Image (cartoon, rainbow, N blue to C red; front, side, top):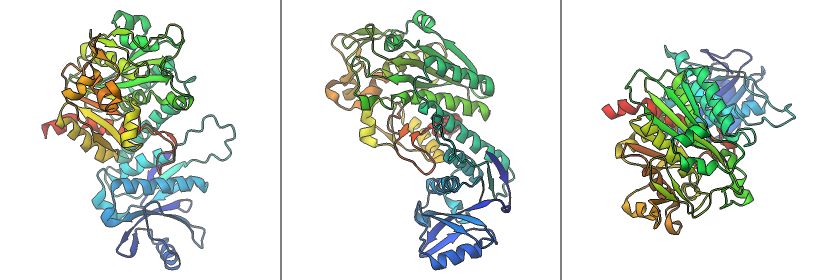
Length: 490
């Protein structure tokens, strides 16, 4: 998709006009040629500019206008602007339009957290994406080829480029999550990371099963030992211009999860191709940091494997030894992601000397029960880390909720026969106890844990996120890393 900065639309452009309601009046900014057409439409039709409200207006000279509502001005937000833009992009696709011009809504200047140009670039890329790789009849597939937008910003092109890159990296994460497990298995995920590392300039090192065994990663390797697909540890390094000590991003990389011997029901397995959502986000974030030339040094670590079933599968009751040295009683083989994170985090700390750990994982069904599909659960070691994440989330319009952690919860993952159990007692506080288990391997470093089991995959279309892998919260991760030291200094 091509992006251009144009003060006014050209004849082949469909116009995407954002509107809001002030009092009883619908307010919008439109080119002189379109203003009277919209006014005439509003005078003869009930249009209140409610969030998600849409009108397709055809002018007498064939001019096509997409009027998208963003709600009442006093309740407007940057996310509602995104949704209005996304609605317009999706409607343009539906009406087989290929060229769209997006007008700047002057009435919305007060609600923007990021620059308008970046917002349009991000949102247009995300809204234009659908996963249809296996649909054989592609006659219906129409995507935008050009988005033009009005701007007087002296750095408009650079800002659009930033938005496009963040949008494209979100789409890359979605593609990984949506890919079926027979196509995206541990080795294939490692190859994707290597390809993007070469393309965008970050270093990728892949450790095979024997190398992981040499590093005593028994917890990680136990999860993958029943699969015919071999496990791989994927390490990505971006050396920025800032502090030499990197931030560690660790993503859960279980490319398919049957639940192991604690087997899931069929419906529970249907979307387990996306159980590597954390890995997808970490890989995509590394791509974004490299493409945008981040000053931060970052190491991304993914322990990639399949949790399968065979005669050599690890069992409930087994006692595993982690790379760190802590022993783990297996209470449930479907609590496998935390086992892979344990060794991946230990690797990041002991081999890459990271100064902080951010882990991202589709870790618990409990977080989906608690928070649904639009808010990710967070557990962290310091208030300042959650503040950083909140500030990042405002730029990305992605949602988080912090959960508590204390010794009462930590006691729930104790074991009578090992240092830890991989499952909490009595099914209590599933998201928090999973985080308590992960915390035991963080070595006292600043630590932020994000459980994305609810937000990683969506079952319905969103204005700028289609069904399937969402790519959330990749953009928040990017802004978190970018603002890490700046916010710390502040």
